[in-house]
Image 1 (cartoon, one colour):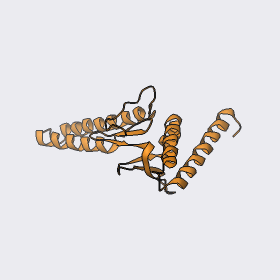
Image 2 (image 1 turned 60 degrees about the vertical axis):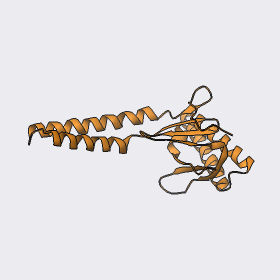
Image 3 (image 1 turned 90 degrees about the vertical axis):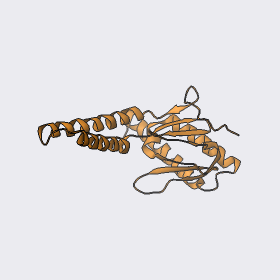
Image 4 (image 1 turned 90 degrees about the horizontal axis):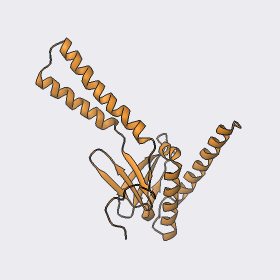
Length: 176
């Protein structure tokens, strides 16, 4: 049985390598929006406390919408940290893995406690170590019998990841 405290990604954990490059523009855009709004107010109708608070709230909402969650995976545990929440999905005790064949390409993981997390396929493609750990944990869930929905999706996802890895090798070697 796992303890409910989140385990930090360290020597045996894997973190999303794209998080910092995605988080930085969210902060820059939110800040630029606030500065631009205040500059327009300064030139136009004038800066007031109420208008400044309104622009600040809108900039904060923009930041909330654009700010990506931080993803880290330790053996048996996926942590999804948003600005205000942290979700822990026990990946070695998954009950469902869904990967609908739609445009969004989001992998939805649900553990036996009902905790859900969505991962973008691009995140898995950009983080091979994260994918390998997730696949090992999902296969452990299948072996233990807790993964009752999604074994076909797991196999399809593994094939797609293998295809992507082969394409990247071909591209880097100039064969493609």
